Length: 291
Image (cartoon, rainbow, N blue to C red; front, side, top):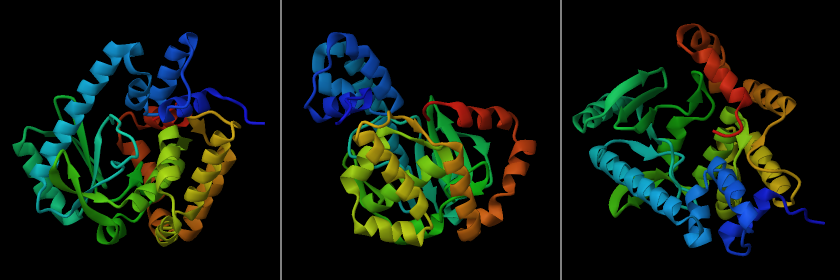
């Protein structure tokens, strides 16, 4: 028998088949925020939280306006919006961009011309900010200086033209975004959000498996689908934090079968010793309920 968890109530609310009771509205709102579905939830319940909906819509317009300006600045460069395309509108905490390493200096210069400043240059990432809006330029998908996906293959084989507010841009294909979401959730964050599941349920197909195989992300994709199946059956709530033994097995698999991961995994030690506050960030990643 299907157990009606709060996550399923949130999912059904967004889908339009459930109306939250008065005592559930704020609890589901917080759950939606943690699962990066706050705007979708507020839209679904309409005027119940009207002021919050207006504020979140304004944040979404602000976010998309900034994205538009960034893609206009990067026109002509080899890049792709990364972890950007979702089946529902959402307001992200930052804009992730996968860039050809050779284009990073020019991208940084072009964004500086638009008022951005570099706040954190790292081996595989340059972070820039302007008035609260953050852009992360990645040359490789990574965490703690460890590469967990092949950014060069993603840029070479899985990029297509898209539009952002009517402006031409470059983004990963939907199938590639499923693989990226799986690798990011499982390998980097160790947490699965409901928005990750929505993405997988919406865009999963045979081509996704092919991409996952090519990029060495099959285990991550299988784990994402396992967790999402558990959530959909009412057996777990989202956000869902992976068990330590699952993370350990995943890391072992990456060391054995992913050359880029194997070569860079020792960079964690450099990260801990060289980056101020790295210990707190690692502890937060290990204990946080969302990301």
